[in-house]
Image 1 (cartoon, rainbow, N blue to C red):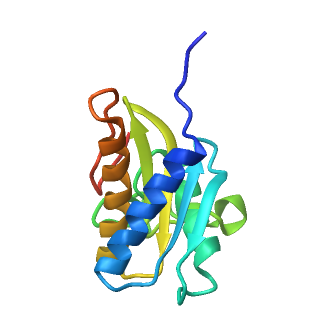
Image 2: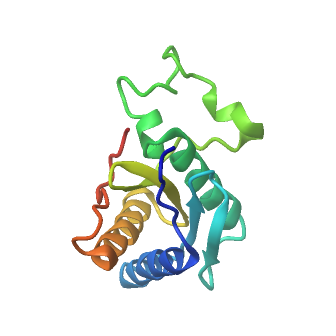
Length: 158
């Protein structure tokens, strides 16, 4: 039997708050989804003024990042992104009834080497979504301190 670490609502709230604080700092209206290891939302927060499509898109990104254990933008990164035409996973974005997101804004939450969830953002451009996603991961690392190691970076692939 293996013990696993489970992300809880308190951590999800802390991560979302950090992402929203970063969004306010850079003046972008974001929707943030923090999902568990199965890609199910623990929290979805849409800032006032954010697009009404944001919650579904943010959830799709968090779902994909958690489920496939990689940052969503890595699927389309040239030249070897697996979802690019001619590569091995071309068309994967139509999986799971179109829920599989293959563009910037989704990041797996990796704690002590294990994917425990995903964070998805929608509302900014790629650079803005990335800044907010990394802020969420950083907040979780700061919360844990030296007790656990959180992978805090944009390009994550396990």
